[in-house]
Image (tube, rainbow, N blue to C red; front, side):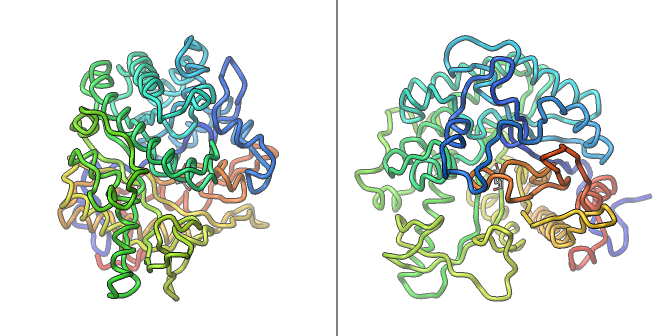
Length: 467
Ligand code: IFM
């Protein structure tokens, strides 16, 4: 059958990747097992009052012990790509000293387990679990941490690079830098703009330095970075609202895209940050702009922004003199700030393709949290999520049709997990997890996604989209 001709059906390009994603600290557990060192998240979560439900990632989904059964489920669902992250302190407990062979062995078992099941591994090297010792030595603001990361990237790529060919240096530097070092809601819980910007710079610099190192260790590897991007619109045509929206876009999107793809920080934001802007070494920007193969786009929301010098900015702070405005009628996720706006994903992909020419792209994360429960019939009827995924993947298809080279979509997340400062109160998975027993239950959305992956598309009516 010619799959491209199905009537009333959204056919995705041949070879489109339907994957799923997780991160080490959110699922692995085994936080102090087999020689793993302490990460900033172990330390942060242990402090009273930091996590909404008082939980931590010590056990999480116990994936460290249950990975084989989890991969079996992935295979049974017909998912052929898995984006996972490697825990730096599991591999090098203090970040820069002795290597922990058992840590590397775990990732080897995991990767071999994927390959044995026909699942393509997409590895992220840093998804926020910085070794605590490196944070105490000054964190990403120090060149020593940048160099330690490059050593770690080299070590992991040498060990796994014959089997892993898709690498991501960092996940969402914005979140680690700003939520962790300006807003203080994430580990390591610092509240200092200068520190946030220095952290972001260290992350970007380490990315640029690691790209050739990974390529050298993993022949034929494709290497990229993952940014969380938002579609931003001013709340009104008023000059101050337009300026606030531009500032939000500058802080959130351009501060991370411009260096990687243009080799410079945006001028307007450098002026806005003034003396807090990072110290930039002579070759830093050239290094950060080392050409990559692809960009990973994490998309969760659009934001409508109004000027408000004293008001709540993103994440409740006014550093950007802006405030988010919600439109009535737009459904929101369980995360109050997040509007369900698939057209924003379409626009982000086209904007990035046109303005930054990043090679190709993957949507490396997209998904939504809902207060899922298991019904008396044993099912999790998460119709809202199902529709969310259908509409967002339809937006990806539309963007691909309009010229954005997007080659895959990774649903966040494979299973419910530890959602950082929200602990276990948010459920993003296609699989529901009972944390007391570690029972897994496939949600309706997971069943739908599995079918879409097998069919490389789905009926247009699922997304209310024209076929
Ligand atoms: O759970 C996170 C993930 O670690 C990074 N991107 C956003 C997800 C949902 O908040």
